[in-house]
Image (cartoon, rainbow, N blue to C red; front, top):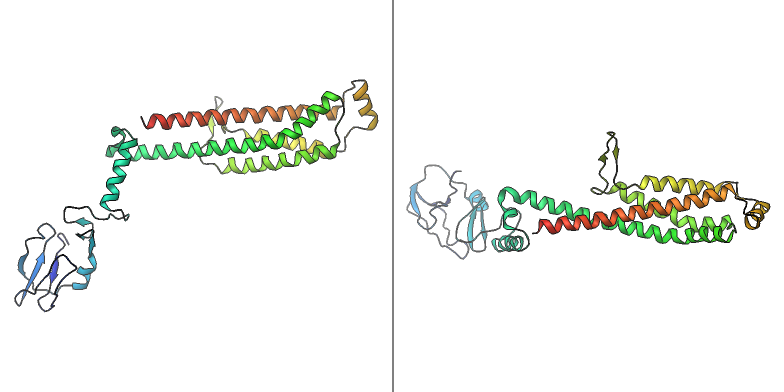
Length: 280
């Protein structure tokens, strides 16, 4: 109905409604209708058709002492909106937004885009921070293996395959965890279009995965040097192809980790800067 009216039927003896108003039945054949725009001045009209009293009462809600009909609010206070927020809560939200956002960004035409942009920046910040933490865990796992390889090469003493495998296991598991995180990230690894038209993710975890695969294969291969090869390597500086490959891949793995950590830290700072600019 255009103007929702609260009707009290003649034959219904309604003493009072809540704590705010008291209604008395009008003369026979008449109903007292309270229009939403003139609730304080009742108008007597003749009712020729029956009213659905229960439906009208169900449509009425009382919020913070004001009558609310449907989505309309009558009175000086703002009642609860469809999301369950009171007028006081809405005012507090507005005051908080005005405290941290420039007023120009909070114009109705820009408010949605501003808050959406803030949300996206916040999610990017969280994901870049999680990438930093994942890479840090990988570096901590990789360091003992890398130190062993470096020390073995400097002393010209090939480390046992058992030691190398034991230290490489945690590294491989951290690479798996990193791949899971990056593949499920929503913002930080959106593909970028390169000059040749190809698409490439910002985070190059595929290269880490490929290096991990090569190192794992070498550690499982039967090409571990013989005792004679190890002696020649130690005393005559005769290189061992298998060991040279292990040493080279370890260096490449470390380089890629540092490169990705540098990228994560830079994007973390850039995103924080964008949030700062948004709030200015």
